[in-house]
Length: 280
Image (cartoon, rainbow, N blue to C red; front, side, top):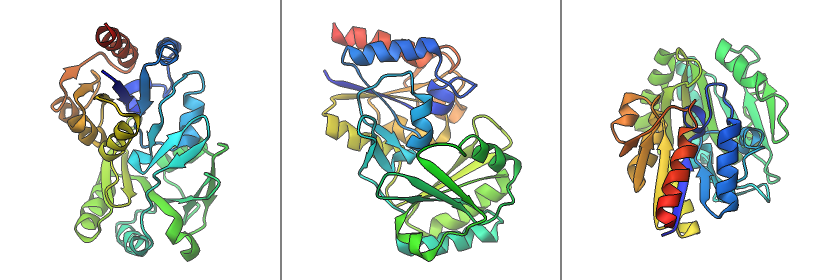
């Protein structure tokens, strides 16, 4: 039976320092060399995924940007990229502005590079941390104080915002009835007072991305790992849904199995044990 193991990163596979522990990297790399199919499904872009997984060898393609694209590590290329849609851009920006939400606008280039536009240079505390951690990445360039130009509307793949619960939830709920975009909001893993908002094209989700990857690989079984609200659709669609011990209660409620926390190499240890069982 061909199994695809697919894990969320932040709060699930990554520890509280947003890193892969040396032990987890060793386990996953050895299993991948042995032919076990291990991947990630994350809201992150390859610009941050690649440095984080530098010491972790995997062979399967990855579900990135909450399922808006599939990323091939060896070729550094995207497949199945789904954009927001040119007609959706202005209405989304207008709605967000009514709630004082200024999003980061992700524009995809043919080279695979991402240009990120933010209409103002004035950033809240969460935004400043977000930018500083990503400012010098090779696959991503920030353009602060530059509104999204009309010429880039057709190439926009993601709107991402960070703010208070009131602003983020209010903007998301106001937007949902008036767009066919995928709108998701959830609490930040590292700063609990901060809420995150993601807006993608129609039909985008981790679940849809994982299903696309499952068909591509020809997997008979999917084992998925998560911790947050945006992992729930993926967990519901998996054959085996696994929540880490630090997951939100809403996420644990849809899980078939609850394992140790993200600081205990729990995902790597579960994959090692499960793959041995099904190999035998």
